[in-house]
Structure formats: C-alpha cells, structure tokens
Length: 530
Image 1 (tube, rainbow, N blue to C red):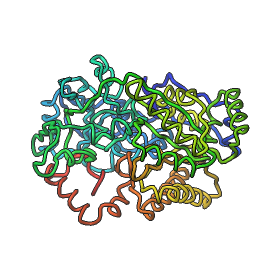
Image 2: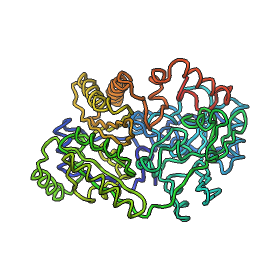
Image 3: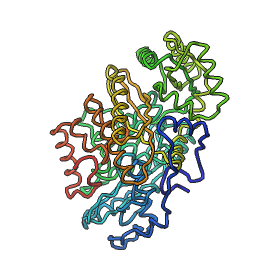
C-alpha cells in the first residue's frame, strides 16, 4: 500500500548501516528519532466537505487526505507532524474524457476550484490545497491510464494522461517500444504530470526531455476543448503544445497525450569512471558531448556527492576494495564519479563506449567497470525511499536544481552549497550539501543539489530553517542567472522567483493565457502565477 505520509510502497524500506549513520553524525550531528502522528489522528481533523453530493465525487476522509499534499519538504512536514490544515473537499476519479469535461463544467458553473492530480509526486507544491473559503475539487486521473492508439509505423502512441511510468512502459514494451522517460519519480508520476511540469528523465541525453516526446493531445478547459494533432513538424504559427507544456494545471486538464516512442534498445550499458577532481570530470563530459557520441546519460558527481554515495552505499567490502584500487591509481580525496550510460545497437554501444572511455582516460579518468553503473540502474527508483528512513532517524532531506551555461556551472555549484550552509549557520546548525550534474547539454548543464540536516524539535522551527535554506539557494541561483527550475516546475515554491526569469511582460503573457482558457480562475489557482 502507498504511504500516506512519505514516499512509495509502505512494504519497501531503505536500510541504513551503522557506518552510514556515523557518517551523517560526523557532518551534521546526532539526531533524535522523529515522532509521527497517526493516520487516524489526522483523519479526525478534516473539516466537513463543502461540495454537493455528486456521483463522480468521493467525500471520504481518507481520499481527501491522500490528495491534500505532494512530496515537497513542507508537504512532508505537514503530513508527518499532523499540521496539515487544508484539504480538498472531494476527489473525483473520472474514467473518460467526457467525465472530465462534466466535472470541469460543474466546477465552472458553481465556482469550485479544481486541482488536477496525477501521481501526487510534485516537490514544489503543485497540488497543495491553498487556504480559501471556496470549495476545492481534486480530479485524480489515475483511472485514465490505457494505451488508446498506437501507430507503430510513425512511432506514435496515445495514452490516457493519468498513466503512470511503469504502466506506460509495460504497455509499450508489449509492442517492442519504449518512451524512455525515467524521472526519479517514475514509479508514481504520470504522463500528464510530466507534460504539465516539463519533466526530464534520467536518460534524456538519448530520448530527450518531455517537450521533445510530447507530440500532441487533448485538453479539457473551462472554455472548451483544445485539440493538438501530433504533426511531425509544423510552421503554422506558434506551437499550441508549448502553451500546455509547463502549464501546471492552470489552463485545464490534459486527458490524452500523443508521445513519440522508440524501439526498445538492443543493449544498455552503464559504467562508472572516477576522476582526480571535479574539473577533470567536467572537461571529460564536455569533450564527450562535443565529440557527438551517443550516450543516454552522463551524470557527474562532485567530490562531496561521490564521498556521500560511497558512504551510504553499504557493501563495505566492495567499497573498501574500490578505495584501495583508486588510491593505487593515484586518485585521492578530491575524486569524483561519472556515470555513463550507452543505449542502442550492440555495435553502436561498443563504439561509443570505447570512444567515451578513451576521452575519459586522457583526462586521468579511471574506468572501474559496470558494477557501480549497474547498481545505480537497479536502485535508481529506490533512492527516494532513503528519505523515509532518514526522516525516521531525525534527518530531513531536500533537493533543488537549476540549469546554467558551462562557464557558470562550477560557480553555481559552489554558490548554491555555500548559500545553504550560511543560511543554516544562522540557526547554529550544520547542513551537509552535495551536488551532481544530472542532465548535460553541449551548451550547459543542470545542477542538482541535495541538502541534509537535523530536524528541529518543533515543526515550525524545521520549516523556518528549510525556508531560510531554500530562499538563500534560490537567490544564489537567480543572482547567477540560472533558471529557477530545470525539471521540478514552479508550483508555489518557485513562484516568487519566476518574474526574475520571465520578466514583467512574460508574466503578464502567461497570466493572460490562463485567463483565456480559464476566465473565472478555477483551475489550480495560486500555482505558477498569481
């Protein structure tokens, strides 16, 4: 069963060794195990439903609670401490486009607010119920999850937008195809959610971000239907799909989506290379990109993330042997790990792997084989479960990300981490920060930072500390000219910084677009823009 106050299946845990706990204690101090409120305690606090009875709408307390928050740090704090105080008044589970249309029409006539719900995996407040006297209807699309049409010749597939990552891939793989979109939230996030937040999958270097994969579809809005045919290309004015991408539920609800699919690759390999330091790793990544090699992933960890990854990995015998090998080969305390992925025909994989590893070798990279790459691939969707374990030990974890040009990337890493540390020092607390470059381009890179810290004794204190760190990091990002979000979207957490990126006219244009599709402002108000 899915956890009501954390990540994932409640039958799955992420064990942490005693040496890992010692590692954390050395960096941020000993923590006190977190005490949680029970599900029943929270359910008793739900206010009365303000929606009228309707055949498609559930007013059950547990349905409402399970759709009240996503996976952001404040969301977790609300749910685990029992401070959650806003809930949808009802949850609908439509089975068809017509039912979505009916529900939006009802909300538009009655003035209800509508929050579209995919997998509930947002980490920036996209699905949070904001304080308001207006009734709130959550529309959960999880039952609209089928493969509706497949054009194998044109490599196009149409799905119900509520299909989750595993269900989408299973239905495609039955036909020898894949979408290749694997965000870390893959287990639960949905196709519609990926489109609405401009998601990026871990192998985007090969398959592309969701904007490349999204070919067209159908959206129901308060003003009517929006149809987007899946053309291979078009010069017929502005691309309406671009209005939908990143719209975060403000325009309407995407009910169907056409996506561009690919044959399942004949072979996939993931390898690990260690470099003497971060600058050597960055140079290797840039040279591999500039050489035009066909990689599906280049993921470069800083020294601190490399150390943290090895410390939390378990397998102490294996890690000890690796450390000895790298030391003999001349790599010291500043070493950094690069994970390389290759996908395609076997011959192509061998050629591209050989050339990439040759470039790495010339930059003093030490290739350690496929063991670490295969472990990463095997566990890549289990990592979020570590957050549950750490919280129960008394440690909070959050992430933030941006993207910038290559010239700015090293400084961006340093400035974000420094801003977080300074912000936490104001509370006389330590924080452990570490970063990797998860998505790389010939012209720049994403920067993905994790920060780990002790939870305070009171939820309000913890939230205050988180806000200070998040604000400081966001200011560092905007000061250096980075985007406020490379892959997590805007929601509520990034909304205060969006105008710095889009400008006053840009924000006005986005707001005007929302009013065009939703004149009464019923669709997910308070998210993305005012």
